[in-house]
Amino acid sequence: MSDDKQGGKDPSFEDLGAEARRLGEAASRFAREAGRFGQARGREFAGAARSAFDEGSDMTRSAVQKKPFLALAAATGMGIVIGLLRRR
Image: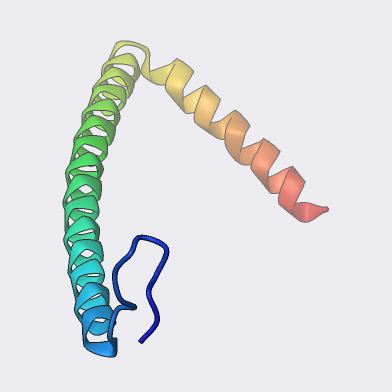
């Protein structure tokens, strides 16, 4: 075998295979950790979205209860506009 630049021998196929396995295991650990991080962030996002939806729903319900005729007029107006847009 020939010497490499560092004064040692060329790595054998077994050495290369072992190094490839170690790299594969490290990549697998990294992927698992990245997946856990993504799941945690997804749960945080879902919780924030749920809170925002609940708050908006409560505000809408309150506004409709305070001014039902205005809510009915707004809904009718939106229905007319959507109907006209779909007609084209």
